[in-house]
Length: 364
Image 1 (tube, rainbow, N blue to C red):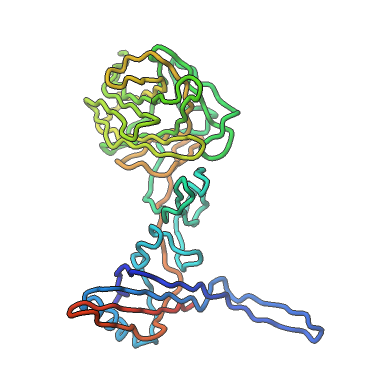
Image 2 (cartoon, helix red, strand yellow):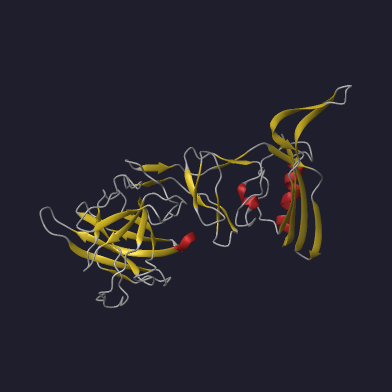
């Protein structure tokens, strides 16, 4: 029988300590030996306020099945739901089994890289934790986001910038699009086998020419040997959380804007119905009059980190350096086991409603 997976109303958590033995010589010198790399004596107190009697009784049933405080058992990640948005406290006995690098946003709003098996916690722009970042497997289909060989082509001019800090805190791989009169940058990749693809990129407005401008994303259809023709269009505004989307076929939807540090934004949009003849056209020109799209004012924003992935959700940034890169799925695995420190305490609140207090202790 599994430990009841109800989300508690409150928790008290004590980290415990590592197994250490201390030796003292006659001279007074002290040496300490560490036994193992896991804490012991970790305690977790769970409070369940005003729950149905039948739910409170499941703790007593589980306690009996564990022979009181004798048997050990795991507890699931679901028990920790609601702890700072699923952010477990430091030292909690769970390990991420993701076997690849992955990125996350740190307390300063900068994109950082976590190594294999390292659990990621995202933060908002105020430095507050938004919880564990747990994602499924995803692949950036674009072969090179490093800037060495940018996956951009066309008549537009892309200028590398060494004096602009990228979203990952470096001063590399940032480009500025310099073009006028509706010029664009064409990006080509093989559409995924699934029906939908999510395209995303990072951009920063031009603070001199037009800080209130917009990035523009087009999907261009082209038969072999024929010129491009625009089949759908989306405007991503730096100042409007609801980008204007014009769409025919294929379809653009689920457009999003995410704010990062240093006035960077990440824009994303789902594209459905791409064929082998489609290309993406990324156009950073300013279009202040979004309803008619005929404003001729130009701005020259920066761009960084394009990403195309199968499916309808944008995921954390996956850098590539010559070939598409796959980020493995996050998977939390329980470490060690728990047992009851004492019998569950069930208190009747009113007919049919009770409160429960459960105290657990970890077993190394």
